Length: 243
Image (cartoon, rainbow, N blue to C red; front, side, top):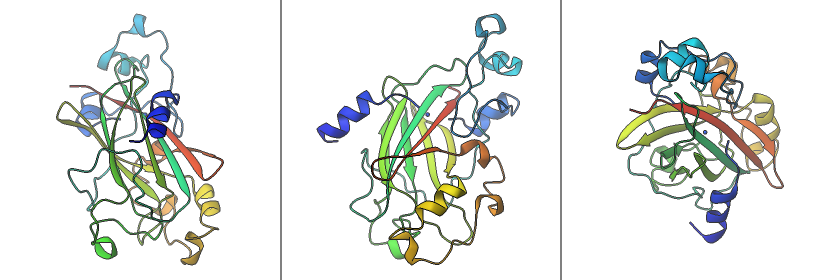
């Protein structure tokens, strides 16, 4: 990581998961108060208690959506780095992914956040047209003291049968605490795809509402997106249960 990346990683404010087994242990509860890309606040947690009891009572509301499939394009042993583009074209996208303890809502430092996604042309490294490289649009970052991991990438492209998405895993102490997918509001994607290199492709065939995986809890994994000087910034907070 260069000096500029290190400075942003340390200084940017927090915005960050949970394993299927953890959700089952918590009764599969998902806090209704969690909005798209948002994290609900704790209310009277001391009175209601923490951990599973606090979640069940509604006092602790940091549990994210149910987990989603890893998919067929995961490659183990990705590089630890903030910029995962490797010079490939696309609209810049900065991801701010925060990891918190679902029992206390406190940030978790040192969690390894692992992401991978298709490039602007809808191609995954290591597969099909991207088989010559196993590394573009893939990387791992450790969360800082605020529970935040930051990545520089590009707005993902689409491929047949899926809506636009990013895959994510969270590892801590050798355990995978979460496997999921992050999504984009369709209206934002429509706007992003009006410029090069996205506009050279035909209209995407699958939107969020028609994606079978998105329909299984994807609405709780929508990134909160805002325009930046160049491109977009996407943020989400994710609650995990530590073992």
